[in-house]
Length: 367
Image (cartoon, rainbow, N blue to C red; front, side):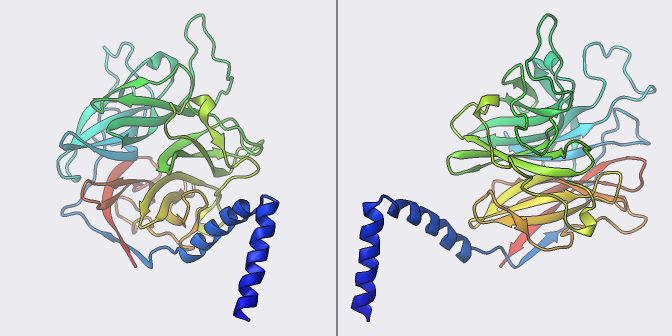
């Protein structure tokens, strides 16, 4: 029986080889086998920081109304840099000498030596910013020693020039930096715009990470024509390319790759952030809109592309009544330190007034 089985297998291999299908079948079966053998960790827990971290930018609306949201963190030249969104100046705090500096929604940066105590450095500076209306929800990472930022903004045509893409919505832009404060636009047009069948011309909340020889890009957008439900799309570009507009291949063409399905997620999935651990990619994401009780969930993937929920309840819910994040724990941003430890940065608010502040906690993955 064993010799017959081997003989049958050899005949099948010979046939597949003859018709040129053996390599195709092998390529299909190997990922399936790898996926079947892969599994996520059994437990995800959160370890408090040595002292509470709670940060709010007071430059735009004063000390009574701190505002900082959409956090992302890197380590550069011996210090931590945290990037975040700030709202427009209110009338009482708008500088008289603002000039051409951004007065509306923008990105800012703060520094720290311990991930707990943060000091504002200033607004993010972008050379070529005459082409963009904002630098919001920055996703900043170091790749091969260089600092890259993907952020959302609307396009503003320079005098006498027009960009051919006519979207009125925010799209994803790309910039680079040597010092983490001064950035340079990679182009005079966005780096990414959705090219699918289901969404409006909008892309926000960028997340980028490497899988093999590809740079993956996740983004949030809404369905057309109503634009009421926030969903996630995903695309890739060759890792060694310049990641410009013409380099991206969208994978979520027919439908979103991740969308709200659970009661707590309501009508919104946004702010994906990804970390790889032991061959498994974990995507932390925000469920529900900001004006509702946004909370954080987790999905996992064995290939960095296809994700499924780790569990059906929030892994990091909003706080208890009366706490600083009673109304929301949202917009997660994962940071991996040089020692491999993982930290979750997130935004919170006590009420619907929108006084957003930022905090962090260490993430522990347990088998």
